[in-house]
Image 1: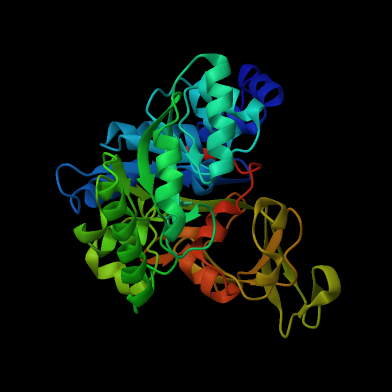
Image 2: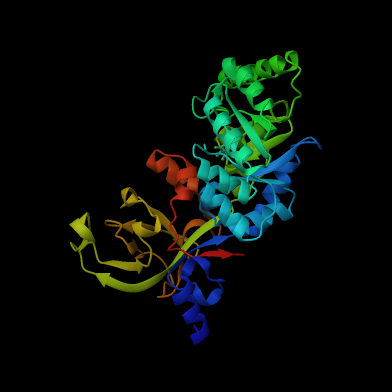
Length: 394
Ligand SMILES: *Cc1c(COP(=O)(O)O)cnc(C)c1O
C-alpha cells in the first residue's frame, strides 16, 4: 500500500518525477531494464575500433524510455557523448546534472536559442551559411567561442548543406572567429536496407567533401556518419564517433542485421487486471460492439488504453501475455482500458500482471511485432508510450 508521504509525492510531483517502487505498480507501467541497456552499450562498443567513440542518441525522452536514467546508465557504460533533438531536451539533461558533451541534432535559427545553447554548454548543429552568420554575430556579441557541428547532406535530403556546396560552407565556419568546428557529419537514409548502393554513394559523397577540405588546407575535425544501422554494418562507416539510437534500446533497424550483434530489449510494458467477469453468448464487448461473444466467455478488464500509447487500430488484433499464456484482446481499445478473452486461461485473478510488450514465461512480445502489424517502425511504437505510464527503472 501507499503510505501518506508517498501519496503526497505522487500528487505534488506527478507520476513522471516520482522515484518509483513496487508500491506504485498499480495500474500500468513501463519497465526499463538497465542491465539490458548496459549489455547493449557494451555489445555495440565491441563493434568499434578503440579510437571510435559512442554517442548515445537520447532524443524524444530516450525513445520513450525516460531520458535521465537512460543517460546515466549509457554514460556509466562507456558512451561518451549524448545527442538530443531539441534545446529543451538538452536543458533537461543539464538541469539533471549531466555534464557529458551534448550534441543538438535539430536546427537553430534564432539568436535567443543560440544564447541558451551557449549558456547550457550544448553543442549545436549548423546546417547553412545563414546559420553560420547568425551564430557568428551572436557569439561575437556574447564575446565567447562556441563549438559547432557541421551537417552535410549526402543524400538524406533533410538538414544540412548539400555535399557539392559543403566546402564553401565549411570554409565560412572555419574563418568565423567565434565558432570552432567540433565535428563534421552526415546522416544515412537507407543504411538499414539490404541494398547498400545508396549508402555507399552517401559515403562516397562524404569522402568527396573531406577531400576538398584537405585541398583547401582546412584541418579535418572529428567525423561521423553512422546511425544504428551504419554502426552495425561495420567499421568502414564509423570514423571518430557513431550516433546510436535504436540499437541501444535493444531493437534492430532491420531483421537482416540481427545476426551481427546481440541486443536485448530494454523496455517492457505491463498493466494489471482490474476486473474479471463471465459474459453469456452473443454479448457485445466495448464501444461499437466490434466484438461479440460466440459462447460463454470469461473476460478480463485491464487498466491500460490508447491514452497510454496502445494504438487503437490494434483493436481485436492484439495479443498479450497473462501468467505466461497468450490471451487475445477483444473489442475496441478504449482510452484507459482494454478487455481480454481469458476463457481458456488458468488461474487468472484480479491484480495479475498483463505483459503487452516484453517477456513472460517462454513467450516474448516485441515492439517489432506491433510495428509490423501497424505498418510502421519500432521507433514510433517506443516513442508512443505516454508519460501517464510511470517508467520503472530496474
Ligand atoms: C535519430 C538520429 C540518429 C539515431 O538513429 P538510430 O537509427 O536510432 O540509430 C542518428 N543521427 C541523427 C542525425 C539522428 O537524427
